[in-house]
Length: 310
Image (cartoon, rainbow, N blue to C red; front, top):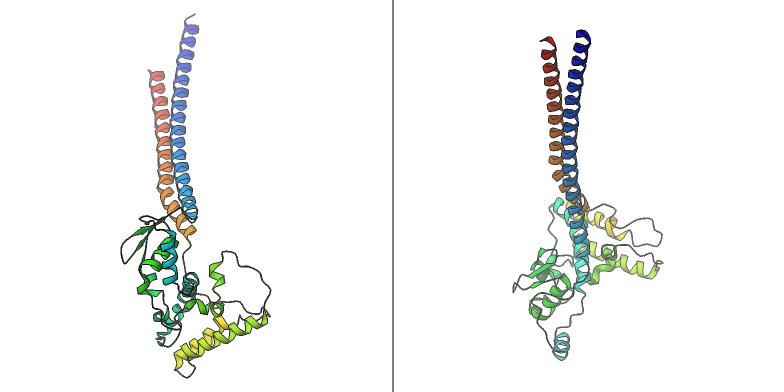
């Protein structure tokens, strides 16, 4: 009977130890799962925040209703101002032409350390909108500011209207200063359209644009103007002029242009940098939790051995 009672007592102690170990493991697993859930929730929140920022940037491109500080005028006054300040040059196409020049020509001109002559129509001084474009301040996604009078606007098109109406006197309206007239030679449509339109090639238009393109090469980069001018002359012909043909053999901007960093990759990089500390923090807490649970189990087993030996 004594041996049976000792056996029952030992089995009860063993079952209690197992229950303690099981409870310790369950509590530790619950703690680890809670920590994992918290970190996963934080990561999802950051991901949602980043996606909402990207969505807001994309939606901000839509046209807003009106500009900040825009004063109301009567229709008659607007009509008179429009007639008085009418400029036969597209600001939008001039901006596209300068974008092509800045991205696909100027990096190579700077590399050659070549100074474009003032008589060249590609020279910055020969753009009637250049000074006004330089006085545009892009403060935020939905805020543009006039550098002359510091008025703010929701979108760039409202700032353009303001510059046309209020700062017309600052335009460089001398003859042959409209960059939009060069769009045919510079392939402006490729930078204005998000999806290039497939149109049937017109041989007469292609020949006209090629002639204009070659005249720009001769004026801006004369072949007899030295080694740099000669190299840039050949470059300009390959970069812009050779594509003006209906054969489809060459594409515009075949020599490349200014290296740009995409906004999408910037957003992904920022998101990665934000999530990396969370990931390493989760790994650290998980390893610390495993270590703590191992120590608790070891402590429980050592306690059981001591009781057994006693």
